[in-house]
Amino acid sequence: MTLLSIDWFFIIEKVLLISGVLVLSLVVAMYSTWGERKIAAWIQDRLGPNRAGPMGLLQPLADGGKLFFKEEIIPNTSNRFLFILGPSIAMLVACMTSAVIPWGDTLTIAGREISLQVADVNIGILFIFGVVSMGVYGIMLGGWASNNKYSLLASVRAASQIISYELPMGLALIALLMMTGSLSLKDIVEQQRHGLWNVVYQPLGFFIFLVCAFAECNRAPFDLPEAENELNGGYHLEYSSMKLGFFLFAEYINMFISSALMATMYFGGYAFPGMDKLGLDGNMVTILGFLALFIKTLIFIFFFMWVRWTVPRFRYDQLMRLGWKVMIPLALVNMLITGALVLARQH
Amino acid sequence: MVLSVIALISALGVVLSKNPVTSVLCLIVTFFTIAGHYIMMNAQFLAVVHIIVYAGAIMVLFLYVLMLMNLNAELEPQKRNWLKYAGAISGGALLVVLVAALRDASMPALSAQPTEVGLIKNLGQILFKQYVLPFEVSSILFLSAMVGAVVIGKKD
Image (cartoon, rainbow over all chains, first blue to last red; front, side, top):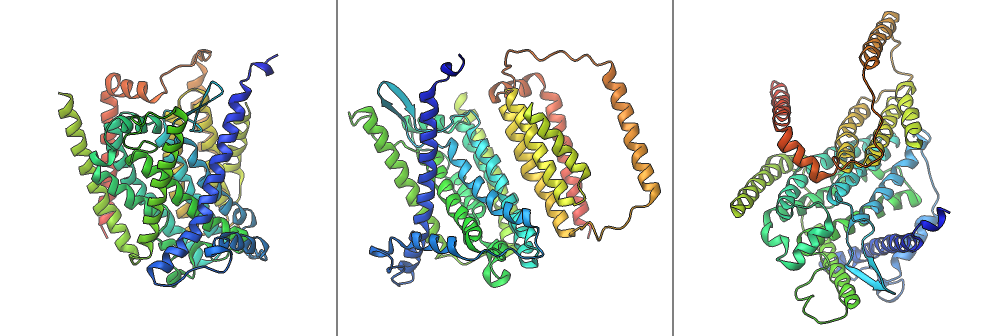
């Protein structure tokens, strides 16, 4: 009777958690589209979406419904299988990263400790790196399979941009890891809970990570793969209906995940000042911690949007020069200083 | 077991497919199955690094070049006959060498106990204590390769 030896509660708990995290990221991504338009309107002194529902709150639903019911066009000369695979990979990869982020401390329900993290693996950060590096395939395959020169150009741009900015991102993370001594995101948050936030120790590293996150998400000012005035819309030029929706949606999910990641690694994650001195019940503290993480994430998402509507787009050679000649040396210097300080503290 | 079957099928796909892009995609699937094998041997670090480096970076560059060259099955020039023979002979020679090398190798069965070497902490300890010299020598090798690439790139 091997069936009975499986911890069914464990499986149910994880399934619930995974679906919860997925729904959360989808809903946040959905309302990011609304938020993006509202913030753009606010910055440009307009009203923004205000027809569907109060304050235009039903606008994302209307947009989604429109995308689902639009006619689907697959170009005759395209590679059909890869054409469909492109947006699927983009969406799949975007949803996978959330697995290792600790969304909160443990909840105690009916005597069981439930960790609000899908998987606490000892290579958490590397897992995210691996998944993010897969994300470029969605764009590349989609752009190539469309059999359109603008799409191809855009996907080539995306590939070289993402690979270039992965390097300084990794170097900035190495400096962080030297201090924490652990790759598990849970450990990193717990260390920040009992000490200062990592951004205090790693201001330069955080800055580099932030810039690279913008580039990895293809967000303005680094949104060259979809520069509409040069490339007619970029890698998703030939896409219509929900396949286009998936590409756009994956971008918003990526934005949400990278915001959550920055909040977790540099801004204390679910820890907030004085959380151990409130004298509240453990479950209450966990829920408050989750809210703290959520608010931090939303602030980062707002920052993403603020930058998009403030800073103009880079030229492509400027982007490459920034990546290779500014970001990588800066990250190396940061790593060197961190290493020296860590060594000095040990002696 | 399932992983190995997928690995073999996709590896065959790399060789047999007519379209170079399909070939590269099969190779990516092969890398993923190999990473799966690493995870089953409790070497998570190796698995993730394998995915990041091979599937994430090197194959993207492969795909990049292929897409820019835009090779198609119809446009590909017919290969000459002697090229086919040369390929078969060199492949066969490699097979002979491999078989000769592996014939005498002893293959101890994997112990059922999961080893802890592949976990990141132990791997770091081993790399920087026991094997520090080979590790540094290989990093110098990479550095020289990088310098060489820059020199070639600067020529024009």
